[in-house]
Length: 227
Image 1 (cartoon, one colour):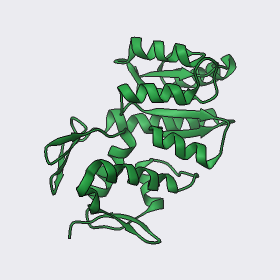
Image 2 (cartoon, helix red, strand yellow):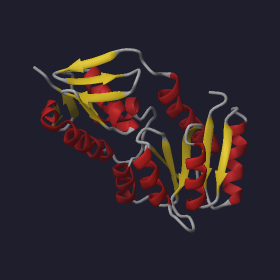
Image 3 (tube, one colour):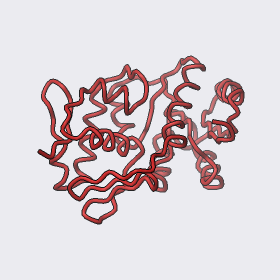
Image 4 (cartoon, one colour):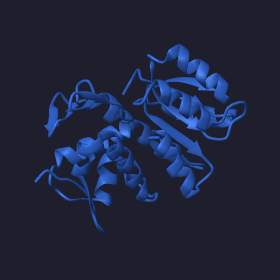
């Protein structure tokens, strides 16, 4: 994953240096910001170069939530990992609603952080598939990473896209929440599995009438059903 650029946003210089030191060893290029305002300035100046953002929540001038909102207005798919000392369930669910791809709680292992960065980038950069999935007017073009419903383009975040793709690739197969977390989130997720429910709710809404295909399997998980 060499020559990819990561924007590290944290008001603690010591934390930025720790993260930078470990990522540079993996040949990542690092951009740094110590507050939310600078983060947005750097993003706007380098939006075509940045491949992933590590974003702290509590910062001066502009907090992580505000930065996240503004970036998501411009780019729905750029991978964003939130760094937070807050471990409240509602905070995490709120973040996923805004479009967070991952959460890493402080204090964390730098090696685990690097592993999650690499796993997320592997899915967004290295593993673009060249096929198209088409079911009942829902078309997913994995080259362009677009979703259309009856010809209308639907905007989706990276995680929403990956979740819908996984469900459609396993048409008519019941998938457990644990399996969805392990496959779509690409690691053993130790948070509340209700984060899946939050994403499913948003996907159903975006699909409109076609959202009916995503069936809830009580006590198990979900299924993309067309039978």
